[in-house]
Amino acid sequence: MRFSIEFYIAFLGIVVVWIVWPLFIGAGWVPTPRKIVRRMLLLAEVGPDDTLYELGSGDGRILFMAAREFGSKAVGIEADPLRVLWTVVLIRLLSLKCHVNVLWGNFFKKDLRAASVVTVYQSKSINNKLRNKFIEELRPGTRVVSYAFTFDGWVPERVDEESQIYLYII
Image (cartoon, rainbow, N blue to C red; front, top):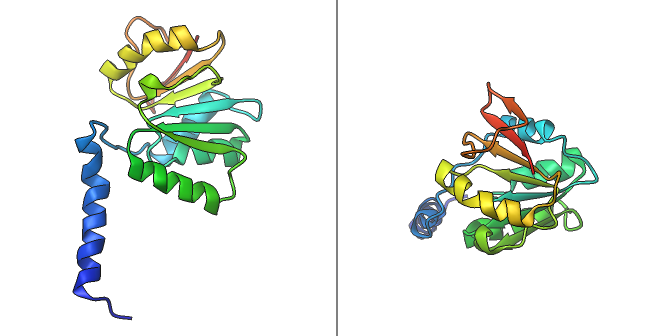
């Protein structure tokens, strides 16, 4: 099967938009390695009674692993509409509509009260801006799992130093 030059140009355009678009909306995408995702979920002891929220859900890898391997409900919040669309398609293909949902928008403007676990892979400055939101919205006992970056003024309950994963409990 041979493709036309137009096909290759269109494909290249989609790839460029996929990579560059997040920079325009101020939400660069750096996917969490799957090995780290599993360790984050294990450290937080995610289970069937949990509702996990992922802030900046990207391609949904944390959502899918939380639902499929740990049995939890999972909600992603993502600012990039292309990644939201990608996640919605995967939710349907994987038959996870009852367990996984993705919301398009700014996670600072979304209600997190239903979460029992929150995962973040954001910069230290964004984590620090999230502190007050977490204190205001999250119930006591809610677990916050951060990859690579800590929260100033908070002492983690548990740390996976090798993987740079930090567990906080509200």
